[in-house]
Structure formats: C-alpha cells, structure tokens
Image (tube, rainbow, N blue to C red; front, side, top):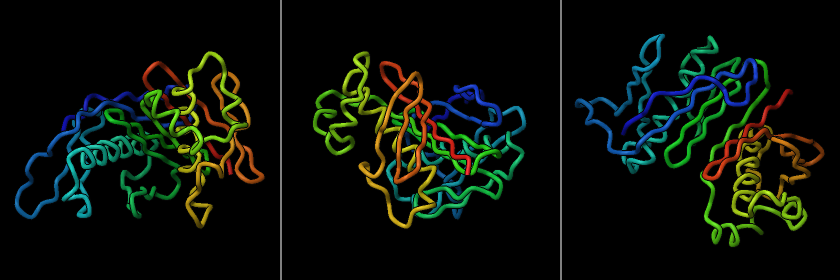
Length: 228
C-alpha cells in the first residue's frame, strides 16, 4: 500500500481540533520478517516517524482492509502526537480505544483517510464518504431517512448527494455517542431535523446534535462534536 503525504490543518477551522487527513492506495503490504506482524512506517512527519502494526485478527484480511486500518492508525497516532497525548490506540472489536484525555475518531473511504482528536470535548465523530450512485440512493433512501427527513432536502442538492450527506452525519454521530448506548443504534434512531449553511441538525431521543459538513461533487465530510 501507499500512504501519501498527510494534511494537518482541520478543514473546519476549529481551534483545539487536531487533524490528519490524506489519501492512500490500497495494496499488499511488505512481507514482514519471520515472527513479526505486518506494519506501516510513515516518514513524512517533521517530529519523526510514525508506525502502525496490524493486529493478528487482520493478518488474513484482504489488502484493502489491511490498508485502511494501517492508514487510519497512522493518522490517529499523528493527531494524538499533535495534541500532546500518547500515540497508542487500543482495539475493542473494530473500534479504536483512545488514551485517557482524548476524544477521537477515524474514518476512511475508498482512498481517503481522516483522523481527528480533541482534548476539549467529551466525544467526537468524523466520517468521510464517496457520493453514492443515483440508483443506489433511490434504493437506500427509505432505509436511511424517513419521508419527513427526505422532505428537508434543499433543491440545490441532488438526492444521492443528500442521502450520502445524511448517512455520513448519522455515522459521525453514532461514533460520537456509541459508548453511551448498550445497543447499536439504527439509522431511524437518529432523525434529521434541519439543514442550514454547513450544519445538519439531528435529534437522538431527547437530545439535539449538529454535524458540520463539507460537500462537493464527489465526496462528503462530516464532524460531530459533543461537549458533555
């Protein structure tokens, strides 16, 4: 695999949000020495190299899954480094376990990887997606949005882009609040209540949340921050 040089400035311009984002090209990993786990070494950070090791559970995974895991862990380690926190992430199931004092999140699409860390928020979620095809959007709309949510689509945003945006925002929110819930949330457990400017407003139970977003012709990026 190839991990290209990473961006360090968070695109939302928020203070105290430590960000690493880049592109990766999925592919087979270099063959490790006997007895060593596959790993990725990133040399592009001015403070020194960063290293991510593939867990045993992924040793037999397809190259794409291995590549996205290692790219995400490199971004997360460097975001933690920038925040002055230990560069060590645990693993529970498929979810990262962040060090004490860190709220963080990782996301990846086919070739994009993002990690964000904050020391000022209780939790955060980030998600990046490639805009889905129109025919797929027509098939999935009812699974992801209610008719009331669908009716909130601005005329300037096509159905596929809007559905991908709402999907991404709900995914970001799930990442931010999943630790509070004993069960996995479904798409209809979170409701879109409004859209204005670069914000989506959502409700989960009796709580209101907002997602910042960036949307272009091919991709969407969403971020949810939780204060407490």
